[in-house]
Amino acid sequence: MIEPFTLPFMGRALIEIVLLALICGPVSVFVYARRLAFVSDALTHTVFPGVVIGFVAGGLDGLFVGALVAGLLTAVVLTVLTRGNRVSDDAATAVVLTAMFSVGVVLVSRRTSYTSDLTAFLFGRLLTVTPRQIAETAVVAVVVLVALLIGARALLFRTFDPAGSAAAGFRVGWLDLWLNVVVALVVVAAVRAVGTILVVALLIVPAAAARMVTDRLVAMAVIGTLLIAGAGCAGLLASWTASLHYGVALTSASSIVLLLVAVYLLLIPVRLLRTRRGGPPVPERNSAHELVG
Amino acid sequence: MQTALRYAAVSVGYDRTPVLTDVDLDLRPGQRLALVGPNGAGKSTLIKSVLGLAPILAGQASVLGADPAAARGRAGYVPQTDTLDADFPVSVRQVVMMGRYRRIGWWRPARAADRRAVAEALERVGLADRAGHRFGTLSGGQRQRVLLARAIAAEPRLLLLDEPFNGVDAVSQEAIVAVLRQLSAEGAALVLSTHDLGVARDLADLVCLINGRQWAVGPPAGTLTADKLRMTYGGHAVDLPDGRMMLVEP
Image (tube, rainbow over all chains, first blue to last red):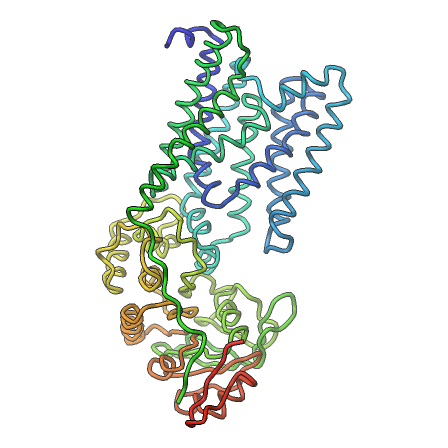
């Protein structure tokens, strides 16, 4: 079981996925609670042109900077567009998502090695992670965890009760930007390893699966982290075994995502059992009519 | 004695469009004010303007001796329960602790004083035994009491409640009324919007009738009269043959 991970490239892949688990677990709890699944999806797509531009300008090293600039820019644009619900959140997000993704496709299609580049950007290359990439992921992980730790209380209040937190003096707009930037950073950190399409799974599935078994936010973050780390380890082993012993090319990132989804599906009955045992009672409602003497 | 809330010829609204005009209020510490009017009258907007969340378009407004925007975070607020996600994974204790977040600060852990304030607030609303329960598993009335406890934990001198009796069972309503009386006896000024004229009459020192503008303000006996209610509610007031009047929400 451990033997494959003694190989440098497998070991690096494992370290990378564990680092990603450390940030995706906690962040996915906020993505779940704020219902930011679509925003996260948009971020993964808008990072795509940044990745392409970065790659064209500076090769593999430029990729990170490109993704970072695009991610932060999108976080700001999405926060401004959805502020005060001037445009419906979904419509604004969809416009930004499709526009930026198209820009990315146009840019990447101008290159000669079009298909192989596109595959790498979309689905990632977990097995070719370099020590430098691991260092960059570690730095992003520290920034994300510190940002979450500082903002956790305010973000929790804002997520649960936007009007109440604003009345208490918290700046909801800034908190939204804060969380969007955190999500963008996670996407940037994960995009090279698992690709722009699959990174969204790491931001949504862990918390959704953890919610099936617990009602506590901290427990959700811990379980989510363990789920990604576990699925990461098992996914890497699966793709290793498949290609070595059965000659089947199984992408490691997609194995990990499939395992995560499988865990989610397996936990659905647990959730059903728990809600059946103690569901919330239906609140009583007053009549809209009032009689006065 | 400093006034808790003073509005003089105030208009409030959004995007420069007034929702409510001609508001004159003078609320002293310990007084209870009921905002009465039909749906869409501007009750929530008025409350939000006091909290600094809806702009004052005209007139003079003073909240706890300051401009509403500057006083933001100092007045307590109890929202309607049904605006919150019942599926949210948060415990009753965590919800009440939110009332202390501004005092605790961004990263410091909660101190013994904070935990004590939370326990006392839950005790006052009669839900001390539910502290560990998930918020969404409580009944509508109990959830409303938790939100009241959250406001109490912040120890505000001015407390605003948006329809605190909507969807609330009789037991919880009694509990809420009792706590509100205690709070004002301790010197807190209260503003609550309500559809329930009985509650307004029994609980409030002052009643403010609004519907697009302020139609009347004063003690319940002089404001909750058939004439003034008919004026405020317009076509939504229906006279019944037995001499009573029925207010029909649009």
